[in-house]
Amino acid sequence: MTLGDIVRQHRKNLGISMYDFAEKCGLSKGYISMIENNVNPINGKPITPSLSTIGQIADGMGMSLIALLELMYDSHHSQKPQNKNDDILPEEFNEFSRFIGKLGYYI
Image 1 (cartoon, helix red, strand yellow):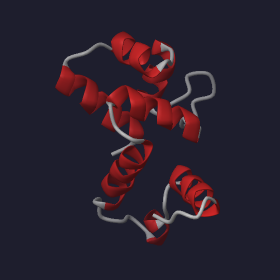
Image 2: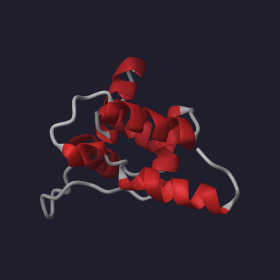
Image 3: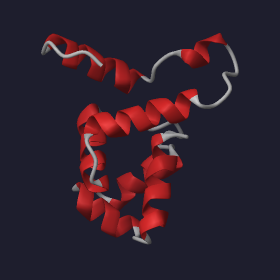
């Protein structure tokens, strides 16, 4: 599952609109739509949200950033790898892990 799949499932489970979820996160409805569809409509490329944005989404979901990153990681790794490169951590997780490591914490 992608971050967008997780967000969509969360919204559906709560029965809230994209607009309401965007308000909870402090993001625009358009950006939540791009996250859920995992496509930037301007260039057709996948969305790569910043760690800060993922944190806002986690807050909107009522969970910690670490919990959301773990959910993304677990859902990514619960799928059967298609090739040897599929076992690499998402870049957002690597960036977060490096940041936390500099603070003296390890995940």
